[in-house]
Length: 282
Length: 317
Image (cartoon, each protein chain N blue to C red):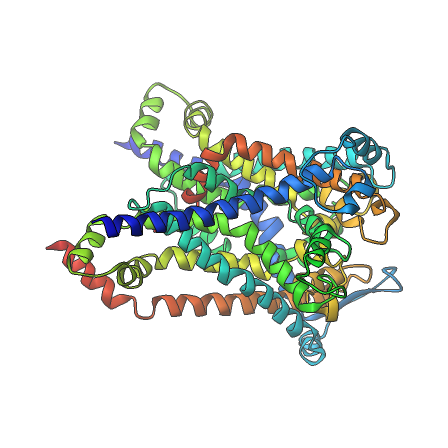
């Protein structure tokens, strides 16, 4: 009995040591990022520091004053695109998921299986065709080229479909119909509020995905005033004069990473619960 | 009766109306682009003189593919992509499986699980481009990590993370690992929680030790979720772009060892807009991904039919 208790104690010590080391490593990476954003270039070059400098405001000022990369404008672009993408893709996917969940129309099963299948296609390989199409219809000048194609999101659809399966029954819809509500109204006033937690999670996921998206914008965005944050980051090559002062460079990373981390920490419990719902059942 | 049938027909109509936005957007901006990517791969189609003069599209059947095969770049880059993916994926699965087992073990009864899960999942939401830039700054030749390791005599003075092929690849794999192991942990945990506790208990009653239980019962029952993790990770892995593009500033790294297929495609689509060749490379990537995914599927499910049937029969009794 005591021997197995000692054993368990040793195992627990081992497990906690590894977990804490891992957590500390990850925290350390982001902590260093934050600390370096508050130091002068000379200080950053000296190596790691556990303490914040007092250059945070100055680095931010220098970064925003740099007209070559115009960070504020890039953040505005990223924010508009991510918000619109998240809103539209969540809404459109919710409509589709609700339709497939509730209505028994012909081709319903085919559509469902089709959307599941295309989740397994590496989406970036369609970029050649997408670019030629966008150029041929002259659709390359505004935000819409980045927003509209992202509206049909199979993963978002699948998540919402799973959620609806667990929560929405026909009787509820039937009752609303008896009360004389139209189909569109039922969706907006009964179904949407019912699946609000799932919609919120998907909004966050879509927002993050769009905010972080680099590949397709890098192919399609030509004009400097339409650049998004990841594109600005890609401009900071080692040789470029904008990266001579490391303070603003770290500040730019803080501005692109920390908004997502803050949102995540606020909603982490729901988000983590949400991840499992979007996968296959084990 | 007649009335009821009429309303039912109406409902089906609403079903179609609700899926129209999704279907139209998907067809126009994903399906047709996908098919036209395949289509253009059989054409000579690019822009001469720095993007000024359009050439084609002229049908040239397999010329683009022949060029890809004879030039050999595509396969080198595909090899790089797979190597970077596998070097990150193997530790990812092992660590995630361990963490998932620990978190779900009632014997260990790990405290502060919410905290640990939040921390390990966090890198998944971070912008890959910024994460890569951060690692580049930390591991560059006079970056803090390199200096720290040099000062503590772990590496020599001439050691460089970013000027050597294997260290560059290793760092890319490590970043990929860091960004995804939290996600995999949470997925596998859900799988383990879904396993019927009765099966595990009866195994213990029959005298199976922890290791036997894990390999004979837990692992086989996790097969569907492991396959899901493997295939989604593969599909993400073959599209690796942000990390190496930023880390190597688009150059492909030392000896071009970190040039991935999507970086190659992105480069082809640059100034000279080589739609034909990029289309062929995309198609080839699609086919190879499909083959590898199907391969995984067969490996995972070849021997599946018999044991699962016997478990079902056992349940019926």
